[in-house]
Length: 100
Image 1: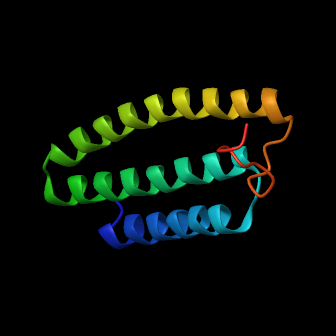
Image 2: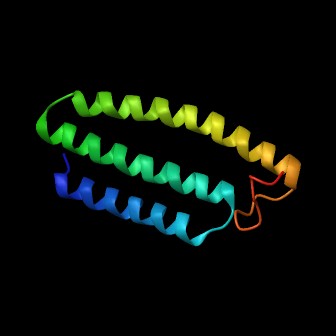
Image 3: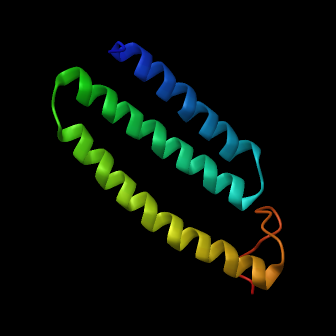
């Protein structure tokens, strides 16, 4: 079994890549995928601590986060598709949702 530090370093790298992607990109789909990457980094942290402490509560949290992420994907993609159909663009700099 890998040490806890390996899980935490990998999760920190994945989370940092997700934050960098959110701050760097202007495409709504790329930002959405980077947010999902950050959620998976948090899931990896929970799983690492769960394995380290021999406790299953971390795995329950991962299951709940995955359920919330699935709902987020359904709603988020529906919103992005709706905006694309209306504006024909998913660049967040050019989308002003308050002015349809």
